[in-house]
Image (cartoon, rainbow, N blue to C red; front, side, top):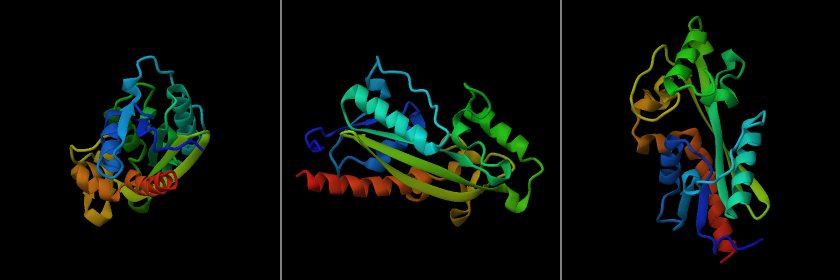
Length: 208
């Protein structure tokens, strides 16, 4: 395996501004001293079409494609909201649940419409995050989940995606009512990132 240390650059394989902000906060700069790049740093980048039928498949596809294109280690995320009452939807279609170019508000509205008759335990949900790290012809996955329930109407202005309707019981708040620091301590993405950072530390020590 080529030394990861010589690269010191990690490509965040996402175009989602909300995810990019969270990625950068969750990785931090002091611990790893990485040069972080995103899709926007590569104007001629290939288009990524999420053809997979699972979070894992889509995360792997994105990480591998971007790593091969840039020649750099790449970290991709595929995540979404899973509602058992809706048989797992929106799931892998979370970003485009109300249509290919749907806004967060439109996706939220569709979820609330489908849950209009659901009460109590039927409104249980969880966020799922899969991180795929591709480096030197190898892809490693890291998983995180966060459990809560769906409110009857949005509350809060922070975060992105379904955060305004995802109520997190331990903090008695929706994700959209939490500061970024608070969210980054408990979210599905935070849990996956903790596993990734532990792996990255081992990789750096191994190649020292």
